[in-house]
Image 1 (cartoon, rainbow, N blue to C red):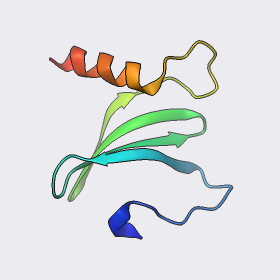
Image 2: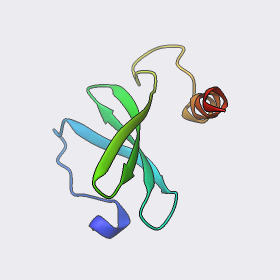
Image 3: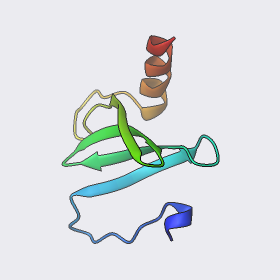
Image 4: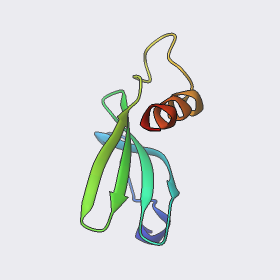
Length: 77
């Protein structure tokens, strides 16, 4: 299960993995949701770093993830 990035989760867990993508053999980006707030995390061996704070999932008028991600990438360039 760990290999494919799907960990067992209960329905009442505080942290929910929304999605992710592999960037290399040992690096990943993962979107997690904690109490309605979505975070984009960079994960590498021995290190987890917050890359971007996404809008709350409950906010009205929030941008779709794809748009927020492209804006974050543009800001980093």
